[in-house]
Length: 239
Image 1 (spheres, rainbow, N blue to C red):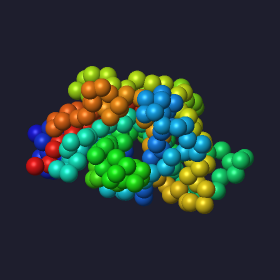
Image 2: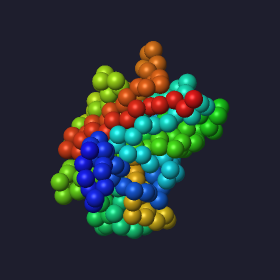
Image 3: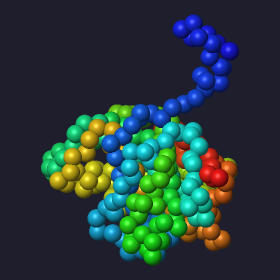
């Protein structure tokens, strides 16, 4: 036990790492944005970024448990992603505007996905619902300034499930770069400070493994990005 402002605090309370953002206005996801992932999925290469959204309550911290609804437990998946956080209002960027000027920093993210609800017969090819359950968007552990990562296309992303590597890709494999994504999202739309953009996942997701690599109750997913750090989240089935 420790004393803080006259109160006795359990020692393990000082070990908790909170989400680097207390709240967000909205979370954007970019689908099919790594060339190798497009190839493994067998989909046509998109001409413009494929966009979906997650609501504010999808936000979770870097080491939080992810509660999985009983209606999602058959086909749970992971998507390690380089994540961008907007720092000031951004709308209708011109060709001469520098998107980096609107970025407060980069972090690691996991676009938690339930493939059952993503299937076309249930989703109408709209990805958002399958990715929008509470805490389906953990980020962290820190926000790194663009001044410390001058080239976000030179990072290395890895995803592990229970210590087994599932994804390992350089961010130079991105089809639409971060500048492209911000320009596209700002078209006629104000990106508010705190807006999160998950820039896409590389190859190696569970849905395209044979046999399938879907997750089970208690599995731990780690997303590690060079120069940023690692998030670690346990998927916990709701009873």
